[in-house]
Structures are given as structure tokens and as C-alpha cells.
Amino acid sequence: MGRHAYLIMTHNNFDYLTKLMKSLDDPRNDIFIHIDKKASFTDFDQLKSTIRFSRVYYIKQRDVKWAAYSGILCEMDLLKEATGREEYDYYHLLSGSDLVIKTQNEIHQFFDNNKGIEFVAFDEQQIDPEYLDRIKYYYFFQDVVGRNRRNIFLLVLYVVDKILLSLQKLLQINRLNGIDIEFQKGANWFSITHAFAIYVLEQEKWIYRTFRYSLSGDEIFLQTILINSVFRENLSKPNHPEENLNMRLIDWSRGKPYTWRKEDYDTLRSSNMFYARKIDPNVDDEIITLISGNIIEKQGNT
Image 1 (cartoon, one colour):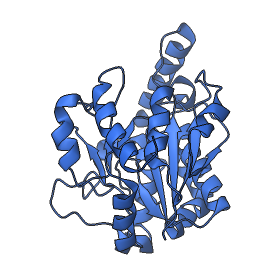
Image 2 (cartoon, one colour):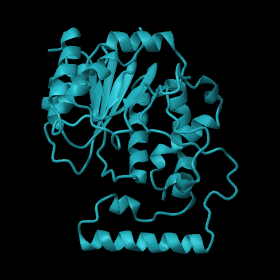
Image 3 (cartoon, rainbow, N blue to C red):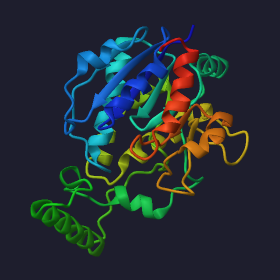
Image 4 (cartoon, helix red, strand yellow):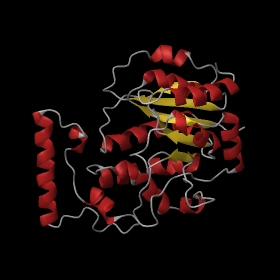
């Protein structure tokens, strides 16, 4: 019987988090949760008490900023905590805005049949030079500013970062000089094996040197590590061109990404993916009730 670790990064919609956890609640799973330090959430014991079968662990809280290195640190924290507890067959990184669209029996059956395969998404065969700029230059204040420029202090830091970026380009600064590897990019949500999880953690010092002052480095570091390792031979291969390698259903054609709604029910139910990104109960709560309610009922976790 395969054992899986679910790693959840969340910062809001905590009523939905209960439903997400219940859809993962299974004796074969453990759940590891990072709740953003900025979130006004304190009901840790109450949330944990709703889960019947899985063990639930909370990791230390970080103030995770959008597109900043703190996101990478959070992923590494989750992997460290989970690999330190047990040798799981798979580690699944989810956000608090992900919807589980298959039962745990279906998910476990698939991964049992595909043991050793790494389910990591890649955007293109070659990384766009625009994305290389995100690690080529220093973004000194990204971990302070994030995407919040609503007060004068953060706005000033944002402007200073832009000025410093222009200066780096003028001086032809390139952090990647002397680094002879292939960089790649893709979604940061993954399903990876224990062996690869350990390998990623072993690259911690290199990750720090390369991505400490990056922009959206969380979409580059894991893909780059994988593609430059022996684990690239174990990368999942799509059955058709539009299939996501990480088994996530994400619609970029209608949004950034699109938020799933009730009218998408048939699309979600017929998909061969396991998780849909993203959902928002403030946009459409009905689709959550329909899909999660059905999954939870099938698993007897009501």
C-alpha cells in the first residue's frame, strides 16, 4: 500500500481548507500544512479535529511574498518536514485554492501503477529568455514588496528595485555567468517521489545561491534541478499534447489561471487529471459543493 504526503500552502479561505483536507483524508495519506504568517487563523486544533484517518502536521509559519524566495523556502520546509517523518511514495504540493477531483482510491491506483515517475510540469521545451531574466538579475526587495505596493514605503522599494534592475542591465550584470546548466520553467505544483524529494533537499545551498534574489524562482528551481539530474529519465510523458505533466487541470486560456465554476462541472468530472486549479468560494461556491461533496461522500468522510 503506497503512502502519500500532501503538502498544502494556503493563506485564505479556511472554510474551504476543511473540505480540501477531507477530500484527502485517507489512512494512506498524511497532510502537511503551511498557513501563511499574514493570515488571521488560529483554530489549528479545530481544523485538525475534522480529519479522521490522516495524520495532520503544521509547519512553522513564514510570511510568504508573491514571486519571492520565501515561496521556495516554504516548499523546502514542507519537504523537509515530510521526508523527516516517513519515506512516502509520493509528495504532492497543493495550494489552498486546489480542488481534488478524483477519489483517493483512483489517485493511489494511478500512482501505484506509475511508481518512480516524476510528475512535474514544464512550460516549453526551452525556457523563454524573459524568464531567465528573473534569475539573471537581482531583485533585492521582492521578499519585502511581493505584489503589495499600497503604502509609500513599499512603493518606494518597488521603484528602487526597478532602478537597480535597469542599472544591472546597463552594467551587464549576469548572475548566471559560469553556471553551465539547462534552466527550465513550469508550474510549481508537483507530485514527486521520495528519491527526488531528497535530491532536491540536497541542493539547498545551490538553490540559495541561485535563487535568493530571484523573481518567481519557485517556477524554475525544481524544474531546473530535475532536468539536470538522472531523474529526467523518470519524467512523466503526456498521452496527448494538452495534458499537464503534473496531473493538474489548469486553464490559462480564460484566466491567470481561470477560476472554475459550476458550468465547468462536466469538464472537471470528465478530466483524467487529479487536481483542478484554481477555485475560489467567493467566486463560485457551488462547484466546490458539487465536486468536493461527491468525493467526500464516496470516501465516507462526511
